[in-house]
Image (cartoon, rainbow, N blue to C red; front, side):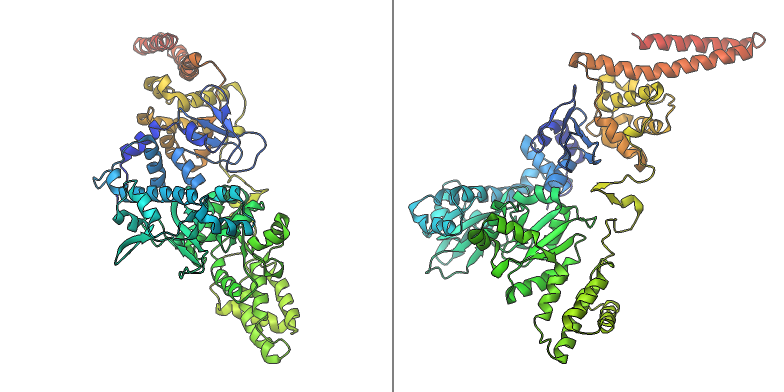
Length: 629
């Protein structure tokens, strides 16, 4: 396993990457003045652009929701990859070879993974090309009977694995892959007579990770003489781990992140049906039960820390569906988001529902969702004969823990009454059972109520209309006064943060040691002074952010991307040097005033002091003239 990526490589990759090009693949960016771009924020809904990007400093900031960072943090938030993965992706894009702390090069450490990913992509293209051949008629018929045309198949990359023994194997060998590599990738199996295609005579769905790379396949049996399972998936490989994969997540991630809603269905065709019906947040597990690793993935994409999200499961109203629901319910308390269950009329799955009743029926099914605990409670009661005392008591024992686990205290009494009504029992008796279940911890204890606050209940974490309320003491650009002194300090800091190399180290250093009237801008000035060694490096903004108190970090981010007065490119150097020099000149004027006052107080009696002050006045004037050169 590779060690940490060398810091020098991290900085070099960032320096070579134009953040505007990367973010422009996600957001339509337009010019907002020289060196400034803006567009609609990808992190929240807005009608007018408040998302600003400064390529020359490698930084972005949204004045609407407060999201900000560099190109690495953007990829981490948008594509939900780790920091190391974001660096590796950009390095690969540049063709830059990374080095790791253990001395190994990136190529040596990642070649196996990269080779498997490339093999999967080639196999996916092969399967898709086979879907149009005469031998794939059974596959096309299967899709057509379920309401999927060629365009739908293309949208989801559906392909066909030919019936032959080694069609894919020969194709991959022709592209330079060894049998050993094909076995490692899970595309072929090894037997006594050599290797053979793992998928034969089946429809094939490519399974992609959150970044859109094909990491495996799921294949559906079509032929009567196929003795294998109904669905066959890629085995565990260096890139495919079924407990950590959700089918359709690459297509759904942006809408999940935007709407804070995810719909979990049970199969590939259900995902296709939902997306085609307009439910574009649908995903499915790949040959395994919904579990803890899936929850971690969804929480990361949902931003599941406010209680405002929704996770909607679809289950069949049969024994298998009940088992799946109960299994999901045991894990649902890991979500902060509200959890629901959506069940179609007559027990139809989303694919069959769309086929028989149309797209709107699928949407109505999702909109008609019920709270998870209500669905589970009704499923439990259905197992008992409520016409008998024994049945009612048994049902109460099983259902009371479910009600006790309702995290919203405002809902719990209502569902306690509902349970009493459904059982036909006295409310007091049911209330005591629910309280007892809560005390004994029949089910694992859960978090606090979902009130729209953060987990801590800190007022600084409250949400209003979906937007965060800044914590007390946090300073923002829009809060600054508009007097001339503050404007000069603000514009000077913007110039130093955004165009430090154009200004030059000496002038930035001098300006960062001048007197400021506004205390919050003075704090940013101190951060610049403390970080001056990094003034021309890709880490400049990050270093300044780290050097100021947490309450002032947003202000640094905003100053780093706020548009400077729009000027032609050839005038930019003159402008940023002039406004920075203005700070130094103001400081020198104040020094001159102080020296003149001292000169008056000294008088002519103390000739030595008088001469010292006179020399200091001359030095100040020389320095002021030098600024105007």
